[in-house]
Length: 276
Image (cartoon, rainbow, N blue to C red; front, side, top):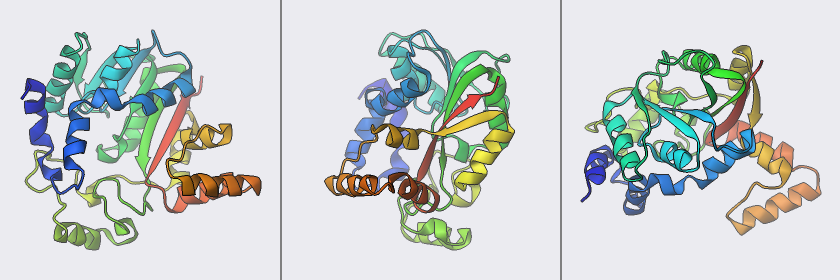
């Protein structure tokens, strides 16, 4: 077992209940090889990415940061978990990359104003202490016209992205957490220590999140809706492709997507452009 695998494995043991655990673990070990979709989102937002100054905030185990560096961006990784910082360094080392890694919280970034062309914050906002302050910091470290690509969890998500359970976001949080415990899917005993319980995490209604981002000086684009309108949004299931084709022929594809985004979808993927 490699040093990287040894460093990663303790952070996966709370998810052994997953039916696809072996495949999921492999994707974690080799995370940098599974970033094509998010790299494509980045290019759709900013154009050519080679040479850009990029901050990957909440870099996690470093898969996206390393993939972006291999694609030619000048990446700085910032991660709150010290153990993850070490994993990022090990992942970069196996590609012989010199990738700066900072151990810091998103609420107080150790970087000057307007230092970056682009910031990414994948799967981060729900776990921080103060999401509004994190977004304010993203605006501060971006140059005017720079882009922050973020994800956020839908408060009405039918299948919860963290616990993989249906309907729990439609229940009062205390009841939802009782059901999570009954299914054996809590993170009790895991290496994680903060902002992991469902009641502690920050989930959003779409319109409220957009309004918050606008107040903080961003224009907002839903990256999936942009793909839908350009015809490049791919549906892996043939039945979904047929449904989308039928809705498109009736002029209802965009309204149907917007309804799904409001009431069902698990995650929002947003491109925030800093107003000059």
